Image 1 (cartoon, helix red, strand yellow):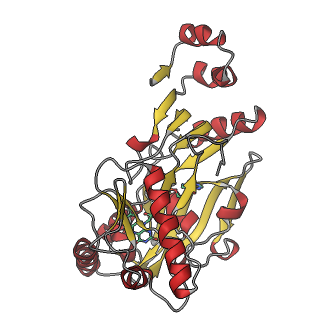
Image 2 (cartoon, rainbow, N blue to C red):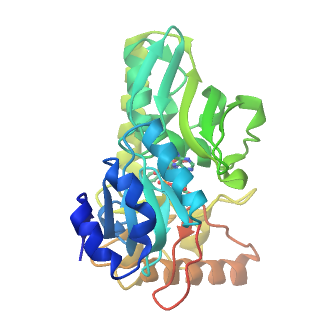
Image 3 (cartoon, rainbow, N blue to C red):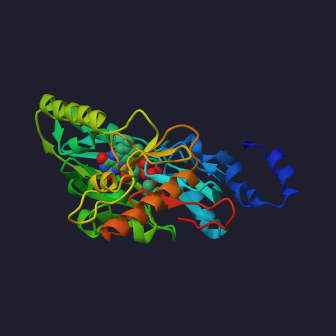
Length: 326
Ligand SMILES: Cc1cc2nc3c(=O)[nH]c(=O)nc-3n(C[C@H](O)[C@H](O)[C@H](O)COP(=O)(O)OP(=O)(O)OC[C@H]3O[C@@H](n4cnc5c(N)ncnc54)[C@H](O)[C@@H]3O)c2cc1C
């Protein structure tokens, strides 16, 4: 059952249980809302995933820092989520404290630069840039992630990549330090950034763009979105392309050739519209997703000798095993 701990009296009652909530009491007393046992399937794009033991939505950098500092000092496992569009959260859920950053969503334009907080949608950031006649982010028109998630993943599409338009990224390190990286320090590569190694939390990002024709920019973005709608199964929950593209190969055609397009495990199906997507046809669990992923990986290895790596991040614990964290 989902509970909301906002009053000291309620927390006192939970003291009896001697659970983790005691470690979070100071934050709750300061007015930070922390919920317990929240099903994360409410937030993931696949509509699957187990519960967060504790869940908070920091409203600003100060709240984010307090939450991250508390987790570190009290040794509470910490998981950061953006828009949950590239995540499979195992059905056992996530122990410790989960932070969803989507309430930190300010976007500010100054000259050729756009500063966006980590939780801002990359789509909103791109359209804001377009409305200010700034070109460079058109590729992001239909990527359903947050700015933090786009930096973490170096999200890209239609020949563009997040890394190419970044000036700097402000992060909170796991040791509590606020730090700014310039673009060339972030070791960007295909669906990779340094943040994947450091575990830093992206607070905000400054994008540097070029002046352009607003109407032309918007026309390109609308065209790319129409193309996406035509090619991708956007009518179903999914997590986008599940696998990274192996050098020299395309995943979709390999899945088709292996006879796995349309293959269904429980409610999870390799999409009939785009074989590289796994859609939730209704009632899928994260376990269904994972079984289908493993089945595809095994068949592709057997038939083509290629080890498919997942692009989607798989976190949390299996219903029957300990937390595997992030
Ligand atoms: C229909 C669909 C289409 C898609 N199309 C594309 C596409 O064209 N190109 C593409 O690249 N991707 C695509 N994706 C995948 C996804 O949208 C991107 O990977 C996106 O960048 C993920 O952002 P997010 O905020 O949803 O991250 P999440 O899924 O919330 O998290 C992904 C990872 O980023 C980390 N993270 C998130 N925010 C932060 C932060 N502030 N600080 C530190 N770490 C953070 C998380 O811990 C996690 O490990 C698609 C997904 C869907 C569902």
